[in-house]
Image (cartoon, rainbow over all chains, first blue to last red; front, top):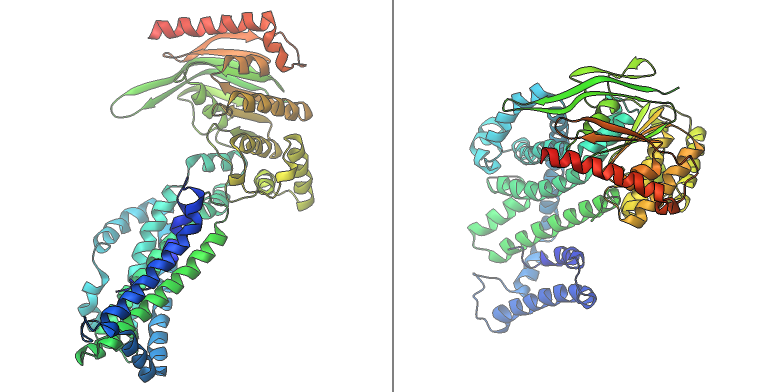
Length: 273
Length: 256
């Protein structure tokens, strides 16, 4: 569903990064990405408006999408804003807590033994499976949605952080100790900076997951949000709005991912590619 | 004074399955400002000996003293340069070298002065603000060396530091080490499996044997402090090199 927007940023990063790629391909890469997107858009128009091969109900035409945007007007922005707000809040909160707990577990042996079984048991459960309980506990307000999104990000970051700490090469720790760093110093000056790249890649995974969980939670009822918009439109088989909603999610998710990856490229500019 | 006394030290690594004697009955005195090279085949306990002096591990039997004080753990008085790349990739070259001084609470001006001095000695002044990923393997090793030196240790421990470098880079590293060691003499323990390297750099060469891991012989290197790379063509240099190689081969055949 996100096919229309997804290829652009990813391909832009992936193609030049290919090692030993012959030089001409590097210039051709973005062109291929743009070409594919343009071709898909043209195909979309051709099979809908152009030839009418695909019925409006099964896949709406570009024109009907535009009409939907005009009809919804500011409501679209309100819904998108509500979803983005929930995603950001749950992502920031859940990730921060996850990193903190992960660091504590990596540092304290008994805490690792105490929490690891619980985390390993809860981690494979898709957060949306908990929706019935969440509704019972928190009702259908914002709290439950934020809880689910935060839970998903928390799980990713706890595991990511403990693994990252374990991946710090022991030679760095020994070198730091023999240069006069106390244990506390080793932690602050070696362990924390060394895990930054892995933490940031966890943030990216978490942000995508937060969108998935928050939108799913909005399906079950919300005063505003893209999930609610899609669900409501689907009841009346208003497929242009359904498609518009998914595109809206894709645009926001890609934008957020782009922001994180730009920031992390700057923060970890020291890291070898 | 930085004299290291290794007194009848043994180190046994025991798991539930087996006991490995990594070092056996080793006694050795390393004098102040002496550069001692330890050579031996891989698995002979050279690195174990170095890790014991560094304080990363404790001896099973015996004692190791620095200036009469028992070594109880890693400390800034004994800086280590490893074979593996241990330069912190998230710090610039200058910040890497400033790491030790910073940990020891030197003021900013003291740090800057030390960093500049050692950058100059290892020939990396132009790269002060570069990140390690921008440097070659040899340059990173020089950063590592400068960092260890700049932390102001009494003893410098080098664990096959140039083992992964090509011959020309290695030769450049020998010169860099000599330059730094002349500028600020220290007690240096240099572990290597390269006999030429040991002979070229060392005041003494300790030949180790594997299984049981212990000191086979100690060779006083007769070439004095002024050495150039041409020394390797000297017949006496080659004679001693062959003598050490024979000793190692003999040892190797016995155990093979």
